[in-house]
Image (cartoon, rainbow, N blue to C red):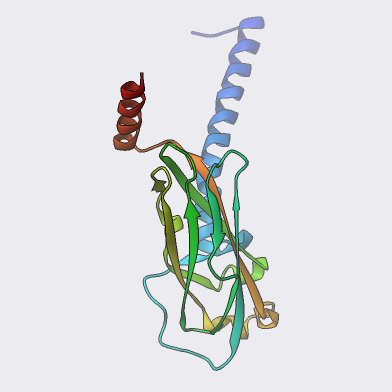
Length: 191
C-alpha cells in the first residue's frame, strides 16, 4: 500500500517518532553497558577477585552516599575514607535504614571521581549489583569490596590520582513480586 500527500507525511512522522523512541529506550542500557566495560564516566569495572600484584604505593578512597529525592531511607558510609595499597582488596560498609512502616526496595547507582580513575577502580562484590529490600524499621550494613588496578601508576592521567571518591545514590524501585503481595496483604488486614 503506497501513501501519497498528507497520508505519506503522517506515516513518515509516525515512523520517525517510533524510531526515535526506540533509540531513546535503547540508549540507557547501552550507555550503562558501555560505561561498565570501559570505565568511561567514572563507572568502575567488576572483577572476580583482586590481582596478584600489590604495590607499596597507597591511594585514599573516600565514600559518599546520597538518596534520590523520593527515597525514604537513611543511607551513609560507615567510614568516610580509608587508605589502601594499590592492588590489595579494600572493604568498606554502607549503612541503610528504613524508618517507615512499609517495606521499601532500592537500587544504587554509583560512580567514581575523578573520572580517569574509573577504569582502574575494580569492584569485586557490591550491594549495588542487586536490588535491596528493607523491611519497616530494618537497619543493615552493606559491604563493597574493591581493588585499585596497579596499572593506574603507569597511566598518563591515572598516575596523578591520589584520592578516589566512590559515590552511591539510592533510588526507590518497585517491590519484587513476593514483597508486593506481602505489602498488599498487610494493607488488606488494616482495613
